[in-house]
Length: 529
Image (tube, rainbow, N blue to C red):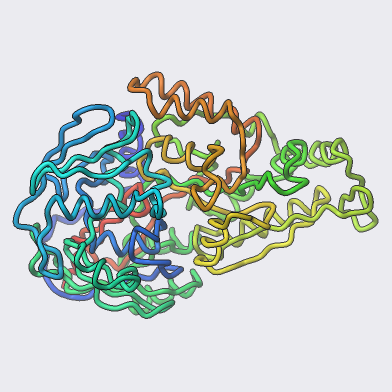
């Protein structure tokens, strides 16, 4: 995984520096002040048991801490653990920090780690992140400050699963006392404490002066919900907010040239795609899926809609992920509307009087589920896809829903939509995190994330082999073969690999963009006076 992480670090730093060079000598950080951050959508929950998307993780990663964490250089760093030792392919032993307390005053220890992991990986009531964390079985207490994280089978990326922000350790006392309310008022050990949540308006956290590690500089961080990207940029320019997440791509260069602002960027690990639901005819017909991908001008979408906020995707994995294989999708499935129409005719469709293809008198109509504002230009991409499908004789009806509703709908046992505009970030930077939960046969929601309803025993065997192998070279080769199957069967129309971008006022210092969307470094930001 070293090469993938080196690639991300190099490219991310180049982009960040190129967009806004910094020549001034460093200034000592100052304490105090409130940082107000604008973001497009609200959290689903502040408990990683329920929430595995960035709107919640941006906040709870300040409150809840995992044993280890992935740094901006994509290396595993200690957090609540001081050291760790790989005991076997199924077991890692962690030495824990002493004299750490939760925000409610209760002690952090191995029992708290066991409570968190057993709660998350209880097979009767598994957490949302259990389906993407690999075959973790739970935790075993060795002594008060030593704990083993145990997998049920050989699992090479185990340390990277433990390093996810979802693995933040919760206060057992708070969970048991608060019940369902914990998801809105989490209690952890982090540098910030939860303060307030006004639904669809703002969430705020305050500095924990009792924090075991380096104290935060800021007194308070406020995450405001401003759905429209233009409104977010206006709020930044007027001083209503100090930082914007998911800024308007068209305005990036304008802000980068303005000395009053800073643009920070890192190459990301998220791929935004049009995902296929194979359980719904006619998407179940590979000829129709081939027509759809060849009728989609992905380059035009990236060039004209993304405006620098992403790069063309060549599969469901980003180039910085271990196991990524270039697939040459533009060569396999070049944009060719005429060929797309021919493929639809081969599938039994004929042009109707209004130009929409039909079969046995029934028009070819697809339903598309799309968020608005969760990913860069997601709504505009959905509308561009709709227009391009119309050119090949396919009518697409779009349902734009709030992110929380989209999230819940994708997780339902039955998906009524033919296609979904979705994004997926490989949080561990290891292909297992994406290729198994997204496409393995037994990962259909609500257990996993295979909303594609892809059932392929050959594919299942490959991802199982890669997961258990201890050879990096063998795992890469196997993941390449698995991606070839996904490209052949067309599980999605990959659109772009996102960049993680933040625009902030020039007096906001210390922010380091992270390739993993959820891990953004707000904790040690400070405001220059």
